Length: 52
Image (cartoon, rainbow, N blue to C red; front, side, top):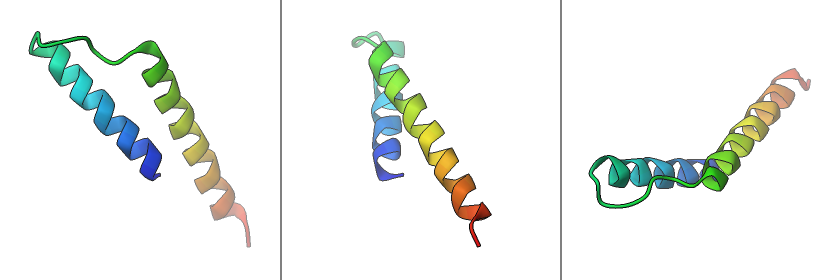
């Protein structure tokens, strides 16, 4: 969860920079990595809820 939150903060910062015209937005790789981390986290939560 910590890694996903750090990645999320980086992406939000990059979007802010882009919207302000101060630099590029997040890369496709950053967005893909974030999505993969979020999916893995959701799967883990589901497994933990299902285990006795």
